[in-house]
Image 1 (cartoon, helix red, strand yellow):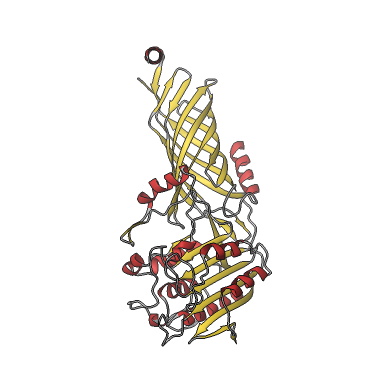
Image 2 (cartoon, chains in turn blue, yellow):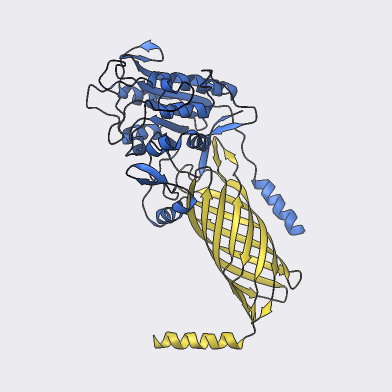
Length: 298
Length: 177
């Protein structure tokens, strides 16, 4: 009995956790339509992707009692603007913004991209030149930013942004680029191999959720019966829905009080919501870590 | 080779000559787990606390005089860890295989040590991981078949170190071979 009491006391002593203090949510979104509707490589939906995510994240930040700061890099109908002010920008401006952010360790930085991705995953921030924003360059810039960083990429081959985990494996098996199987049984041998080998070295403080693997394309339009899906890219649609945006009413909503939204909670929600055939062709990939960022808490 | 074969033969003779018993057992335990990340995510800054509830089955367990050898299998649930800043350590399910050696120091007290290999399933991430470590267990036999144990464990993987302390209740059968 004495032993049980001592054990319980030790557990109580060490099980305290810090409540989430009020911090800041910084939302940076890059959405490019490449001169829609007439451009040769036009995408119809990135501007709407940015709009709904901006509205929903702003509402969630307010409901969480956190400060909100947004920087919206937009190209709509070929016209570029930053947070509503018409001005030309390129990816150097995005990197400059990241280096100038004033954040602390408890702040949340959300980076969203909706646009083309090159074969190696690089972001095509300017179709007229060959200059691309590579995964290494963007992740290096993010690593220097204080705070918890969550990156949501709605672009082809965006899985290239995700480093292999040194310890964990999801068990996903792909055949001809399409998801064939996944789950516990398939994950055991690869995760044991990862534990025994030297490869895999994640980036501290950065969690990436991509629309597709490094070998897959993402979809700006897709066939489904989801409400208003024709106005959004597939991944951004499911991401906004998972965050709580009401796609049918086209307005932000807040989950019930006492809840929270975490990074892996979003991943699970997107995984469950996507139609299996869409998910097989564009399989969202996420950084694997034992730590889960709490994005919003009510 | 000849030396090894002679050693094995002598060992078998000693084993068969001793009082050998088959001692299968089942146990439940509750442990406190404190983890530190050495790499990745949030290295070294915080202690992540969680509780671990386990059920163990030890069918391959034998007692040879005062020596005990066994290969227990256990399944556990590790609760979500406390929050630090905006980060929370997710919960996990695990299956562990151990190789254990124990020594009866008296009629009622035993000390054991085991090497452990553990597979974890992180349901929120839909991913598995592995870790290895060792345990030291102090056992007090309240009755011949019932013992209270205090296990101390250390489990390590490439990203973290977890130390555990807790209490177990074990029910043991004894059958002479």
